[in-house]
Structure formats: structure tokens, C-alpha cells
Length: 233
Image (tube, rainbow, N blue to C red):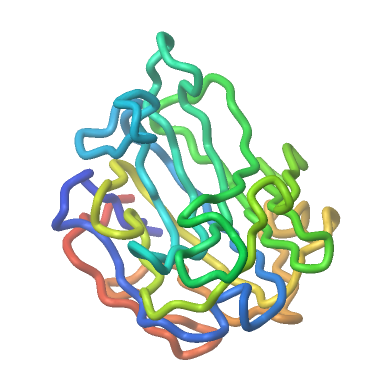
């Protein structure tokens, strides 16, 4: 089986057109699963938190300026900063959200040593019932953060879903495969199943295997456009 490897530049990413099923604002809750393999711990095109520190890449997400929705981040491995190699899943409060702060998010995360070239299974959950962001690593629960910290009110925007970037401001260097999106919360038992390649189909709205020369959605017909990338064993 081949997988799609991204070279960390602005010519390597996948774009999937916007659809309401990709938004926690319209579905109520959302779960996103992906296998990711970082091939560097210092990404060449990264963003920062505004202070010039804690540089990171958005390696999968939906959102742009003033219509941010959700995203996965991985921080550069800089031991001098607070978040070396941290992997996070954020749900945001966009500018259009009434009564909330502008463009702030609540992120659940895990942090620890990451090995270059090693696959990691990550699931992020936007839980509209519990009003919380949740993240799992390799089938195991890692963290949960309440939306009340930033008065999060998800709003559906028109931005596409992108793989290997989110808003074309940072770009992932490595491989990504088996991206799946559900319009509901996956239970802890279901997340464990997904990490062993047993896929619950209830509420599954999109599946991008990323093992072909295109990015077809085998579930919902939301085919993606591949920009660059290299197919490797």
C-alpha cells in the first residue's frame, strides 16, 4: 500500500470543499480520526501563537480568518519552549459567534517524545453535548477541555477541509492517511476500535484513505483535490 507524503511546502496539501457535515455547528458534535507520521520535528513553514514562540503547523483542519472551526496542530520540538512536539485538537470561536471572544479556541492535547517516521493515530472530538474538546492517542484517552474556558460557540463557515495544512499558513512535513469524519461523538470504545482498523459506520460522513492517486471520499462523495505530494510505500 502507498501513502501520501507531504514535503512541508505550500504546494503540498489536499483540499475538500466545504459541506455542513464537516461542521460541529450543524451536526452538533464531530469526531475526526487520522493516522499521521511526522518526518521532521521542526517544520519549515510554521506559525506561532503571536509571541514569536511555540511554533506549530496545522496538519488537518477546517477554517480560515474570521471563520475558524476546528483543527489539529503539532508544535515544533523546541525544548526551550513550553510545548515541544505537542499534538492538539482545537475547536474555535470565530468572529461571527455572538457573545464570545474573537478567534480563540479550546484545545485538548498530549505531549511527549515523538519519533520521526513513526505513525501516530489521533482522534479529535468536538462534543457539543458535554461542550468540550477531547483528544485520543493510539486509541487511548489523553485530555478533555471545556468550551466554557473561552465561551466557544461553533459557527459553520465556508472554508474547505484541508489535509497537511488548514489555512495555507503552515504546512505539514510527513505522511497522513485514513482520515475519517463522523457527525457525532465517538465513544472511548469506538476510538479503540478505530485504532485497530475496525471502523464504526454509524454517523460516518467521509473517509479519505489517501492510498490512491486522488483523494476520493469512499463514504460521502466529498472528493478532495490533491496538490502535490509524493506516493511512497
